[in-house]
Image 1: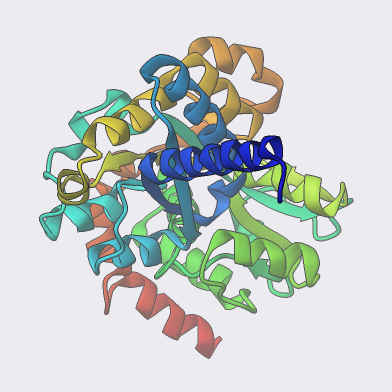
Image 2: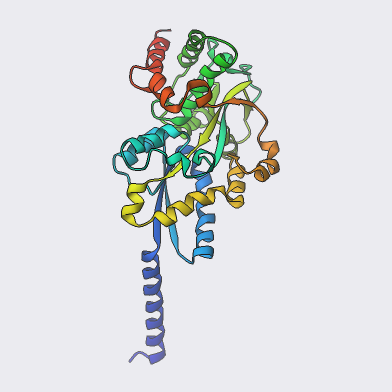
Length: 337
């Protein structure tokens, strides 16, 4: 006959396991659908938020992540992926969800800075020593320079790269015709169109394809950490400011009963602790304190916004990236060169 203390110990252990399982099943779960170069940032941010929420609200919470090309991710949410929150690199992708009535059209007014707690800038990454002498956007248009840019049809990173080059010509006093000509030559130099920024990074850094990678500044440290220091970052004279908006997906959180947690998750992105995490991951913080503390990581560069040069993201999308727009015509022309 088994001794009573042993049976008692097993019963206590079983009860403890059951209590743990019940607590885990009772934890609120959020899904953050984001673009593909934010994996590392949100991994650290989520852990910090979970601890903050437990400390301040006394509640267990689990945050799951989904990453991919920004527009592909937004379409997945529009088609039914149950995101509690969406964290993108451009307003256009969240506007798609407003068009589908998943959240209100004025979503950008719900949080400070147009609901964009961080920013980045589009830069050019080159191989060590900069063998092709790339200093600015026109250098990417030279024959024989392989350029990696994610597909602007599926990637916000790619759209920003396209608009950075186009807008730089206009900011220099050039005409739309001159901008079109330069961007056409740049895209004629693109050997591979990856679906997102992280895939383009892999093609450039791991597969060794291309002489230059057009990407977010926030991607540079991740590249160096994974692939070593065989790369240099080039800041063009003028580049586009990438604003990273976030939004609660109302239809999902109201059905799941997760609005309180989802709103807190996004609001805490503006906290000093979260802004510090963002800065460590190469995202330009909105916090003046965090920005000053990391000033050496974020060189001053002349930037322009999509709204300032192209009117708005909606106008840029319609003119350049909708089917039959400028990008489609440029791609057809660049393939003939």
